[in-house]
Length: 197
Image 1 (cartoon, helix red, strand yellow):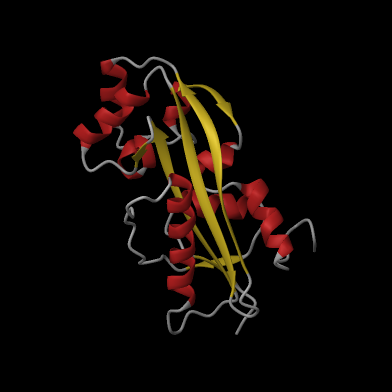
Image 2: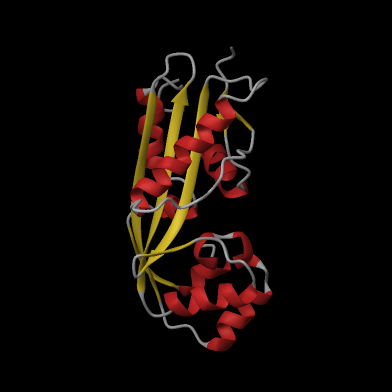
């Protein structure tokens, strides 16, 4: 077993975030089912999915690594989970729901150490406020294609930054990984980061 870090995600945003803090890692996207279980809180949902993603890749034969990072991000508005849009109409519905209001972005992460069996996982919440959006703005934004693979139908690190009136909490959490909390958890599990090497 190598001392490699494996990111169990195909998300280019998560890849960029881990590169931003200088981590060396390989990517093996997870095939874990992203279903919502009955009576599950949003926090429980993102933590369970993060653990499922990391575990699924760690248990795969031939996956050569020690530390496995799984993550899941959702947008919450009126206690409703807004995942990735199914189509442009669905994206427009979500953006209308977020317009002129505050919502929460929850990112869960899990780190599994296959060598010791240790695990760290938690959910981190960030409040995001949108300004009022016009129908034309929503239509033009959807026409760019940016919302189509994003939770809540927007990318704060992209064009949708123009919609964000305010943010309370971790910015990187909204992008896809709460780097402050994740870095601390990595260090607690003995993963070398730029702060420890």
